[in-house]
Amino acid sequence: MRDFSLTASILKRNEEGQSVFIPYMMAGDGGLDVLHERISFLEEAGADAIEIGIPFSDPVADGEVIQEAGSRALKNGVTLRKVMSELQAQLHSIPLMIMTYLNPVLAYGVVEFVEDCELAGVKGLIIPDLPHEERTLLSNALIGKDIALVPLVSLTSSPERIEKIARNAEGFVYAVTVNGITGVRSSFGSDLMDHLTDLKRVAKVPVLAGFGISTQEQVRHFSSIADGVIVGSAIVTAFHEENLEKIQSLIKAGRTTVSQ
Image (cartoon, rainbow, N blue to C red; front, side, top):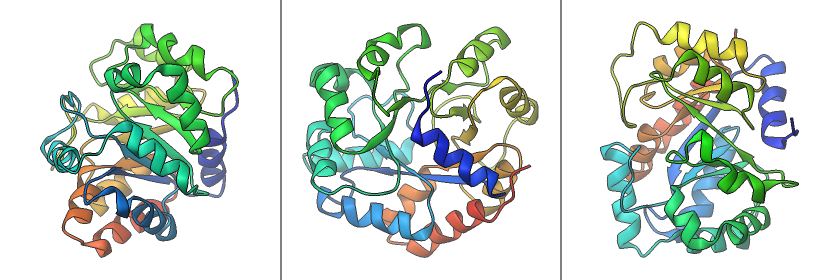
């Protein structure tokens, strides 16, 4: 299995006795001119990495909040190519990940996309509609690159499939904590604890929980089970409402929780 700096940065934080917090932001929501400002804010607030969403017209995994953010970005004329160009113009020390769908990548050209990701300092790719069996569509172009193709594992996957994905995961395992799309949740399934525990048992890389996590209490709870958390809708809403204190409080909750 290849070594990735994304994995190393997560493991380093865990070895220091802390969980990892990764915020999600929609590129171009508020305009591309604030992209670097928001990345810098998240880095200074203590985020361990950042997941950058790309607006798409048919976002099958996105809930209402992120869909609306994507629509605002699309109205601003934001595209995957424009985001990549903007990221290349100003590099950041924090690990960046791109969350996009397969069609924009294919339209971009897989090899060119991967090359531009490398130039932009991108350390991870999350493609929700890329089946595990078809991952070679991207993974072949990633050979020799420090860019992990991060898999998502759903609650409904069979134990055999979960084990296969987890054992071959790059970067980290993105453990989806709800059935369905992203969005704020007030409660989670009773079987989630076992799901995360099983994932940590079989995965050779860290396991991070995401989808639906939106409060400080939920961040602390999942940080005590998984190796870290990913928060999306709550971060997107806070940026849209210019509630930066909310973002800081969520990151603080994630970074001060000792992973068990």
